[in-house]
Length: 139
Image (cartoon, rainbow, N blue to C red; front, side):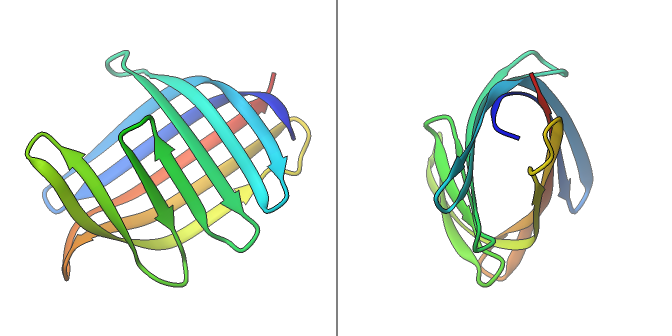
C-alpha cells in the first residue's frame, strides 16, 4: 500500500482517574522508504473539528518517530525508554516515553493499520498511557 490514503485515527488516553478517546479522519500520503515507511497526514477531529497534522516514520528495526505539527517530535523504541521534551505555555515539560507495542501492517493493497501503545512518565511516576490506532484505506 503506497500513495494517497484515507486515515482514520483513534487516540485513547488513560490517566489514573479518567479515560479520553478522540477520533480523527483525514487523508495523507504513505511512502516506502529505505528504512521502512513514512506517513504524512492531516485529520480533523470528530469531536471538536480541530485539525491535526502529523508525520510517522515506521522503521524496519521496530522503532517509530512521530511528529505532531511543529510542536514536538517523539521517538518510540521498544528496546529502551526515550526522552520527550513537550512545549507548554509554562515552558518545556520533560517526560520519559516507554513503548509497549508498536505494530503495523501496510503490505496489503487496499488497507493497512498502525497501532502505537506507549506510556509517559515523569521520573518514576506514570503520567498517562496512550494507544493510537490508525486505519489506512487506499484512495
